[in-house]
Length: 431
RNA sequence: UCCACAGUAGCUCAAUGGUAGAGCAUCCGGCUGUUAACCGGAGGGUUGCAGGUUCGAGUCCUGCCUGUGGAGCCA
Image (cartoon, rainbow, N blue to C red):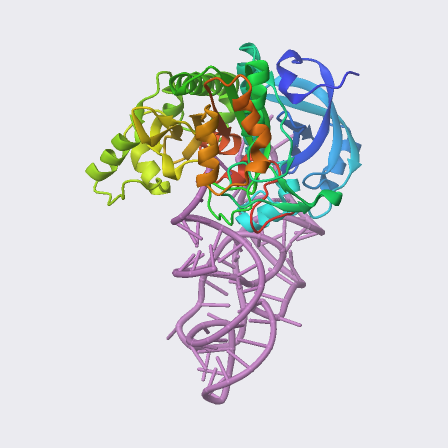
């Protein structure tokens, strides 16, 4: 008999089939008993009735516990009383293992307990919905770039030095070559790729050793970083808005059921269409001051500042042309005002904060050399990067999108820790 | 690193300075359409750790540990 998955049950009505899975829950009413079985693709209610169901199967109900592994056999029928709309009239029950004292009960649990049992927490329907949406987001990120002839460029995880010089990096010994550091961004390598292949995207894990302890931070997170030769800041913003529209519409289309399971209000997602509103840093500061925020011009926005700015719009907002001194050394200055960098951030609605950060890159060798000196960076570590300006330099631009913040926003979660199977945070390295 | 809050049964939480309790989970019994089922019963505790105040501390004080949220930094 063919193995069937619960998500395909609509084609099986009237058939006798096997479902391989685990007991999610059980209920009984004396001579009628219900098993709710999950197989990773959905849940299925199985019914047993005294007399109608073989005694052996009927009696084994008592020994079954939550998360016991089993194979159930029976005829499928439509039934509106069953969760999912289909139900199995159970005729045979094969127990693979009885699970003893499964820790996560169908009641409330605290964050710490659930995080300690993250390997089991992944079995709950809510986590299934989040991880399926994460999968969809990653899939649509790849589709978007692949369909536009971008080449995937894998950047190294071990790097010799800081990409941007500021963040705290994880350090490790690297044989006889001294210290290596876990990458905090693949961008510099992405630039080399763009000047080689025209359009590339780097997609991999990144690491920040900052002691950030908020709902928006992980020490290990995934970032996708497109980089395009001959693009300027405006091209970069257009790419970002087209990209976000693609991702969000793909989730709305393909994962409507999961969004519903998470009780996500999709109002703010349905409005994610290009063009996105664009405001300059100066205009953003004006917005804050009109709202009564005592904001010091020239500093970066904090979490609450970002929320206030984003609340003025019904979709993500692009903030561009930041003061150069709060941005990275490789960003090109605005020819109209050298105090500003040709940088852009995309701030998500509903207080989810910055999901994209990018810029047009400095493409002039002498200017870049001067920036490296101003930031007290070791020039020797950047010689290869400077070569990109020595040999056929061109304007180019790119950005990075944080996958976990994007998943958190699209799912409407209150913390990024649920967006990745095994989150790494300042005080959590296990499981 | 700084600020705030928390730590009591396997889990979620109660308990004026005066005998540590409930719901869920587990075990036993009942119920033929349950939806986190329901009803009855049972077992389950070094109140995070170390001191101190007190006739008496889960409760008050000091220190430490652990966790949560936030700031800074960032995606």
